[in-house]
Length: 234
Image 1 (cartoon, one colour):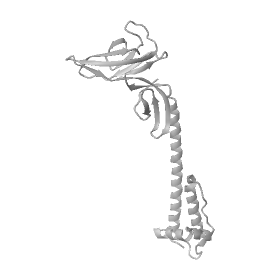
Image 2 (tube, one colour):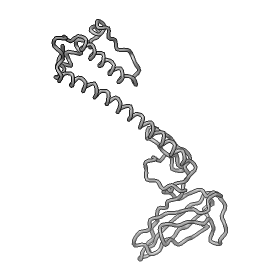
Image 3 (cartoon, one colour):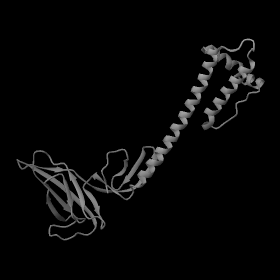
Image 4 (tube, helix red, strand yellow):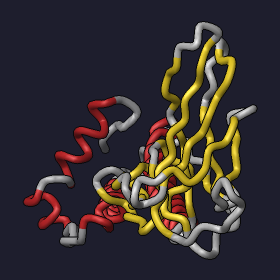
């Protein structure tokens, strides 16, 4: 009987029962199975080889206890690895489903993106605007233009957060449409520099598990990775 407590022992066992000719002689055949059942088939073949070895041992010279422990340990390890693989696959499927469900709820919402234009709708009471004001800034100003490039509102920025109430300088509520925002700051020398603005932009759709993972299709910005740091508006 083959000794499998060392590497030669398992090799001898496979050479005795593992070749196509030996398996045919011993009545062992490995069935053709799909790839997702390959691990299970390997366990079945291992178990059949193990049973054939026990059937062929000499009753007057029972197998060494160490050999038995080593063989059972190998089979147990194979079984655990297969179980872990199945659990990881199930976990990945579950995470993908959860991510898809979470991403789908973002369609129709808005996120703050760097840009100078945004569409104002009737359902929006205020338009949030964010800028980063330089430390040496003495004054900061935000100017808002309508679709015809007419200046409709000029506001002084005391902080980097501003909420436009959709009114012009005379207090009139402006209609829905696209508006352009231009922010600037002036230092103590009177030097003026432009500041980038972050404006609400609508999420138009979601792509799940594409070549770049899950991405958001954002108006005027194209596809944005969901893993990016995004400020989503309620």
